[in-house]
Each structure stands twice: as C-alpha cells, then as structure tokens.
Image (cartoon, rainbow, N blue to C red; front, side, top):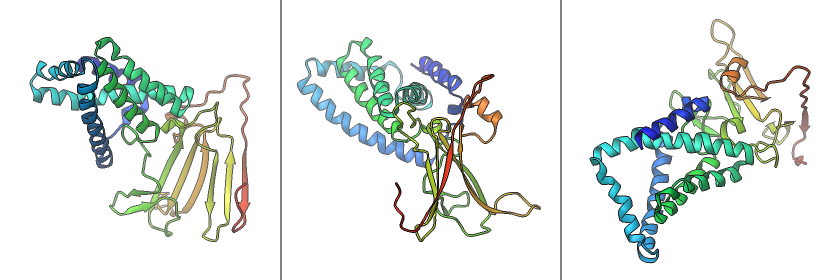
Length: 296
C-alpha cells in the first residue's frame, strides 16, 4: 500500500500542479481531528451493526483488523500518516474528485467520486469493507465539495476573518483604517474550489459589490463561464513598498485564472488559451444602488 500510495500521490502531484503547494496548518489539523472523531463514531456504530445483522459481518471485520498484524504497529502508523493517508487524499480528492466536479458539477462529481472510491474495494470480496469505504468516501467527498480543502493553497484564507501574520484577526470584508500597512490579493472561484459548473450554472454567481454602511453599493456583474474567478485586491498602505508612497485602494477583478500573471497561469495549467482566429467575448456591468434598494 505504501508503494501504491506513493505512486498515486505522485501521479496527482504531476497531473494537478496546484496540489504541490498544499500545506497543513493548525486549522486543517483541527478540522481533520474533528472529522476523524465524527467518522470514528460512525464506524463504531457500523461495527456493531455489521457484527449483528450482516451475514458473515463478524468474520469480515476480523479479516480487516487482521491486516494490522502484517507489520509492527508503529511502522504501520508511520506509513499511514506519512504516505498512505496524504497520498489517498491527493489522488482521490485532489485529482479524481476535482476532475469529476469540474466536468459534472460540484455535488454530482462528489457523488461519483464517492462511488468510485467504494467500488475499487469490491475486488477484496469483503462486503463490509466495501460498505465502510462507501461511508468514508462519502464523508470525505462531501467535506471537499463543501469547500474544506486538502490543505491551504496560496491565497486560501478563512472568510470573512482570517489570522494576520502578526497575530490579530483581519476582517477582509470591511475596509481597514488608512495606513495599517497590509496588502492582500485573494482569489475565489471554481479553479480553486471546484465549485463552478458551466452547464448548470452552479457556483460563483458572477456578482460582487462594495457596500456602504447606509446600504448604497457599487455592484459588479460579469459573465462567469469565461471569467470564473474573482480577484480581490485589498491594499491598505502595504503597497507599493518604500520609498514609494503607499496607497489605499481596493478592487474587484473578475479573471479567467486565479493567478497574478500569465506565466503562473500557464505553469499551473489554468490559462485561457485563445486559438488563432478564435474569438472570445464576455461582458461586465457596473450598477450603483441607492440605500435600501433591493437586488433584482
């Protein structure tokens, strides 16, 4: 399993370059432990149910647990934590589920990934193992489809509040005081989170707005199938660097790729390629809304 895991994880890293920048921090560890605790409770119930009601369930469960004796427990634990577990997430969620969600939509793709994950266990001939894999696969696939990433990618932060590098929380959906000295470029959209379905229209709605406390707003709408990502530029005196004069500026920037330059978009396989003589057109509309004016 270790060799197979390393090969499949390596394949995912080659096929999806974004996965190479996956990092796991305290937040991801906390989410992972909470998820594991919930899944453990589910499996404890399933263990008792299978032993009592599934024909041959007790023997099948003993066969599963007997795998623990193939190697020293410490060696098995290291392999699971260092190679098998991460490789499985990279391959099944980062590669297989990501591709299925892009092709068939977020929830349909997640369901297909969960079924595929369960189906590969059929060759074991262990019905209980197939059922357990189905439950676990559905659990992980739902979390990923709901926006819980494998690990933070560049620009991935909690919204609307995220920890700043100096400790205090930064409120991202409010304009900060002039001159606080921060500059952030954030992206959201299906390229990062697998949430855009160009067929059904599910996902990023192509609407963003800057609102005043009195309810007035400058609203931007755009054609999301062509520009499925939104860049948010929050500069509160952090750019340009000294000795240039710092600025205070905020921008909403629909974009074809969640990368800050063409070279990065091409390297990450996310650039929009326009063939010779091909035409690509899309539109954007600004609208000023008065205080109290409803959206419509």
